[in-house]
Image 1 (spheres, rainbow, N blue to C red):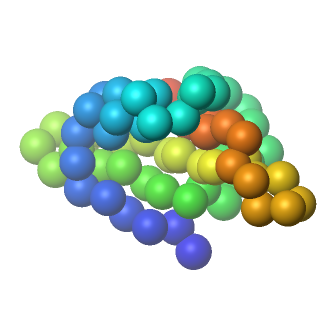
Image 2: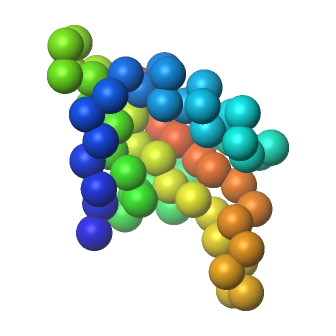
Length: 69
């Protein structure tokens, strides 16, 4: 189930980049079919899908997101 976060998507992604080494803009990624987060800016309505890429052992290796719309 996707979690909705009401926050500025640019700021959210900037903070993710500070914590995770691999943050990629991949709008056509299969991981974004069912994203982990939907970040919505309450002021402008812009949004971004964000998904964590996790290995079988549970280790997070990357974060992918789509275009801001």
